[in-house]
Image 1 (cartoon, helix red, strand yellow):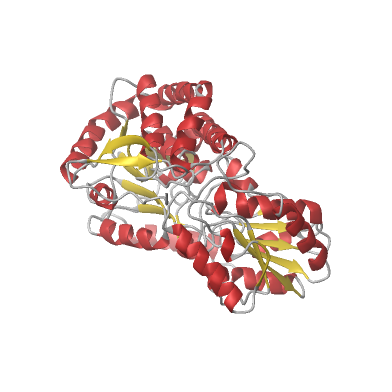
Image 2: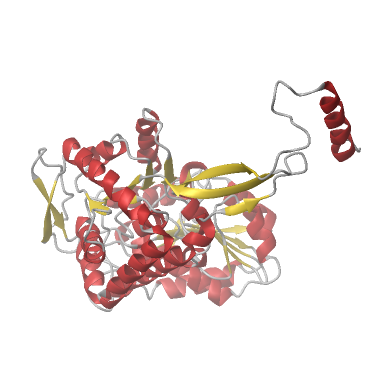
Length: 498
């Protein structure tokens, strides 16, 4: 039986969450209407004031307790993820563990990042004390993806909560059960107010959240949907943070550890069925080491298999419509002269896609230019790293990237047009909670994680407080000409040197 993509049901009714491995119904959830979304946002308004009132210490204590619940019930959470995505338990655990790390970091560091800080007032305003602090926005709407239904939305939710906001969370229609599990666990720790609420449904429900008057929208998904969200949010001047996928490149220099680079390529390309926005989709390898590198990749890729059994390294394609995209990209690559050293068109089944390694693929082919979001990778030889950088940057996307080079890793990383780069290890930036996560171009803008992620969900408030009356009164109609002359001389001394 071929997997069937869930279809929207009439407003006011329900929809089923299906296992992509079996089509089994694993849960039934309401399709929330615009009125219901609006009511949730209104409840969140009062909850946000209460949550902000707890202060940094009070919120940190609750977030740490929530983190503890997730940790103690990790097997249960991982099973819910597996039920709705089909990914192996080990992969579900990896994303959950990383998410737990982010909750801990946000809770611990919110005060230090967002609390009141002194700023220099300058010589002309020396009688003023200058401070800045970051205050909560109020209510944040989070629209999450299905590929990493724990790690990705919590990268927004945890940081928004730590900053003092209430959150209304709409998970993907493919993973509503994961969203419910997370929200229910939080409600056990924060039963007093609906600080974190769940809404479920399809695109209409998400659109209702965007137009509901929330103070910010955090979205992860396709660039096309991100543009629609931005257009809708513009009607109410609602700010957005968008993470919209990528076409990430991995560079291999002559002095690279080829074994490590090959392993990173295979894992980065095929883990989670290739359904990773920061996954490795393109590789540019120096021609002097290309043959050995490709041979290592091919050997490793042959030992990787998709399936639902315990020995399989990754599971099914979660969104059935993506199968046609993956097949089309492989067909286009082969039709235009590319070769499949592993896999090929026959690797695309009704649920599972086996690994495909492509070489000699033209740079303007779909497999190189468009996000495949499947277990495929293209490998191209380059004459030097300058050509590798040029080709890696020749994309409308700019999310993550990877460099393998012993001597030039940092230099090459600085030249890549991407929001993040890992050197000599795959995707390591995603696991470091203190680093911001986000992209440029069609990969979106704004940042989650790290100090930047906390500030993304807060507004800066500047305060200037007069400590004593200045000998020179500048902001008054009673200002004298002698004062203006003195100020002009002072500015010339301070700033007039060539």
